[in-house]
Amino acid sequence: MRPPDAEVAPKELPDPGESSPGGRAGGPGGGPSGLSPASLCVIVLTALAVVAGAAVHLAVVFLGIAPPNHLSQRHATGISRYLGPEFAQQWKLFAPNPSTANTHVHARAQVRMPDGTLSTTRWLDLTARDETRIAHHPLPGQAYQNQLRVAWNNFIESLDGHGRPTGLYGSLMRQYLVRIAVQRLGPRADGGAVRRVQLRSAVTPVPAPPWSHQYVDTRTSYLVQPWWTVGAEDVR
Image 1 (tube, rainbow, N blue to C red):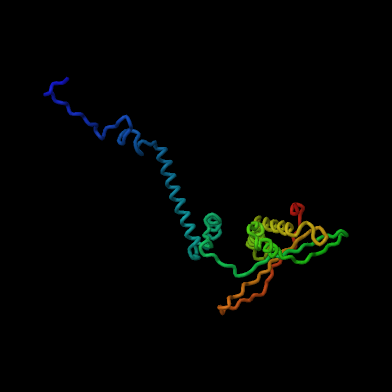
Image 2: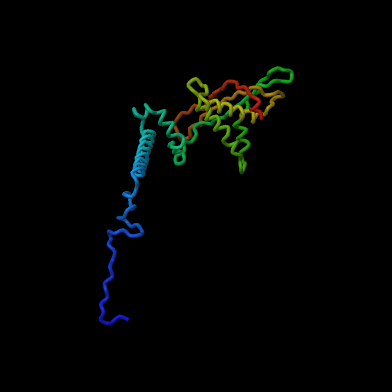
């Protein structure tokens, strides 16, 4: 036991500037100063690359949604390739554009009869057939709702100024339409084997409502495609 009158030595507190075994700030290895020059160079270059990429992305998106100008028209192809389809601006979810015309896809086939002669079937309304299948159906199939419509729209978008499909995408959509037509018509029609098919669209504008004074020509217009040969892979 210590004597009652003995003085207790004050406890020494650690200096905040001194390093501790735990590696607090101020000691060697703490903060950016502890990184090697190579690591600092990598971090700086990565940050610069992220900032530059973000700036380019924002600039391209701005040109894509801004009113047409000299710069956006000059680089329209590059802007379109970059934005679509991941960054395309699509507002139909919030403000859908109602269709102003009813589009039906028709098809007919050229068949080879048992005696070797060729015969042409009448035009069949494939869209009307799909609508009949989904009418009053509680769970209509996706193929009958959108397959033909989407394929035809994509094919039309691939046509050039002369009405010919362009590039690999246009060729694929043409082949896809051939297979859809053969699937709807069957490998045989009117007693003969299907050899070629021809498609056309019948577009009928929706008439104006009774309260509108706008004149709408509701006559049906047709866009007829050439005959397309049916291959063995199209009738599987």
